Amino acid sequence: MRNAKTIKSAMSVVAMLSAGSAIATPQVTVSFTNNTTEFATYQPGSSRNETTTYSNASPKPSNVPPGASESYTVRATGSSPITYGMVTYRSGSKSCQFTTSYLMNSTPGGVRTPKWNKNAVASGGARCDISITAVNYSNHDWSVNLIMR
Amino acid sequence: MIQGIGVVITAPVSVKMDKETTADSEVVKEPDSTMIQTGKTNVSLLARQLSESALRSSKREQELSRDELAAYAKKQINNFALDGYTFGKSRHDLEQPGTDDPEHLARARQATEYVNQTINGSRYAKNPFAGLSQDQLALIAYDDSGGYTINERRAAWCEGQRMKSEWARGAVTRCQLESAQTGRVPVFLTEVLHFYRGLPKIEQVQDCYPGDYEAELLEKIRVELASPSRESNELAERGLNLYDILASIAVLEKKEAEVKNDLSVQNHSAQAPTSASFFDKPSPSRDAEPSSITTTSN
Image 1: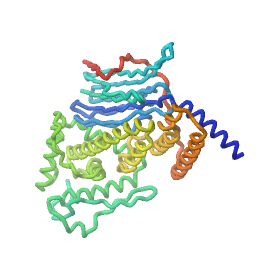
Image 2: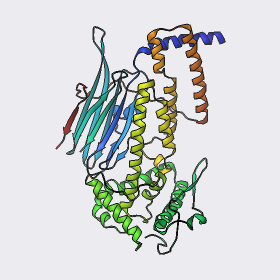
Image 3: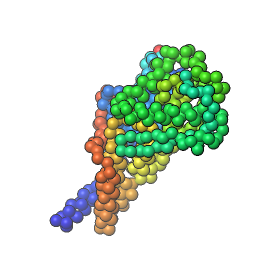
Image 4: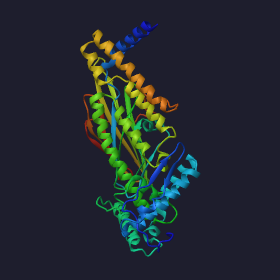
């Protein structure tokens, strides 16, 4: 029984290590700055993308005073080939929804290339800036700056 | 407004709240009398106010359920930070503490100056509560007894948020390093867990933290520890031998034992966080060279 368990463990380790050359799901580091004159409140949202982002965020985003900023990481667990962050902040009547995502593309020739995307949607007179400030080509982690004005 | 404000009391320069943590509640004791007889007069008022606030906070936490305490916190934040504050802004700026104590009057004036300077974008505004601990700042911010002006409470809360932000910035930087070096982040998540455990109870119960947050974090830490490290990936790239396989089994068994030990302390039922594969509504994407976009709405 003990031997069988050991063999099973060895086989699973071999399988795990053989597949281990794939890059683990990358994480995004978010830095949000509130440049409005009122508090910016993080809106948990109701879409799956927003709730998943919230679930994967550490530490949890919250309220940001005028002129202040907050930082957190969004890191998916598991081996999903796609990871993303979608967050919405509201300040008075202004609102910004920021989205950033990573996807590993596979071409027909078998070449796999990483791609990082970004997008911002403003409403209520807000100005929303999103920029990808860094990408790590080794592990594909990336960083974004979000600014709400 | 402030009870017994005319009484001359001397108090310690810094008030240390003695906490007794039990399974269900945290009891905050008053500073003992020997402490109160030392120190300087110019900080005695704040020290005494903090002491009274600590008693009210303790009473509140004992009497209210988690949901009730969360609702109380939400209402207070609305009053000193969100819509409730905005609607009464001019009134808040004129509010004076109900005292003729010059120390308190000066502090309230400083708080109003700080609030307005930060609203106008100043990064150099001086917060009258800089230097207090997270616990002390929370005592001021969430005390609605009238002992502090709304702007004082807002300033105290802002200082607490600034401290959290400063910690988060450092923790996230450490997280990036850990991720780059090992491919996983159990140390970072453990730091987040410890930070959460150190927050005042009224902040732990707020909406931004789910009710099972601690269990959720422990589960994430377990998943991270169980995932292969970058070292394992390097092994796979150079090819395996029998020694590598046996060594990996030993490491896995050791980690499982460690995780079991950790989890046996906590009785929880959190699920591992999952990630969706696709966007509900694919948003327009752009290529990702480090760059920026701006969206404006009028």
